[in-house]
Amino acid sequence: MKQLTHKLLIIFLTLRFSTVAFAQVDKKSELFKILKNNDSLIFKVGFNTCDMSQFENLIFDDLEFYHDKSGIINSKLDFIKVMKNGICNSKNNSKLRRELKKNSLEVFPLYNNNKLYGAIQQGEHLFYETVNNKETLNGNAKFSHLWLLENNKWKLKRVLSYNHIATKY
Image (cartoon, rainbow, N blue to C red; front, side, top):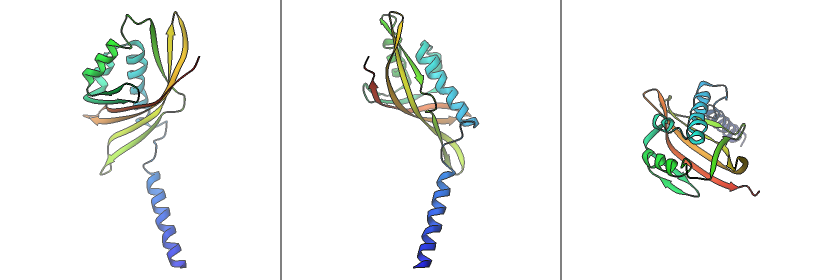
């Protein structure tokens, strides 16, 4: 019995420490900084200012975007159309702004035979709406992004945007 307990302890410790090696990267790491910057380019620049060039550079053509309230978008082209006709439509009386919730961002590297090929980035964001020059918190949501490394450049491949909760005001 004592020998079995010892073997189980060794197996448990081996599994425990092997998963730690592939846990979230340090927030000071180069990978974390690169993907946080890319998130900023897509949202602070692309989403918030409607600069579509950010989407061209950082998103795969076959992007898949899954949204819990508005369905599925199956390409970068369709995503850009939705942005132009929705959030970035100049006829809208309101403007949305997305802000990354402080300290919510996490990055998990993906390896194939010890070679980094991608990363999962997840976090929470807050949405603000400006109507008649007055900005209010509109809601919050969670997201998970799959980034892949292609020709030494990180590009967004898949997006899950979920748990959207409207703020009552």
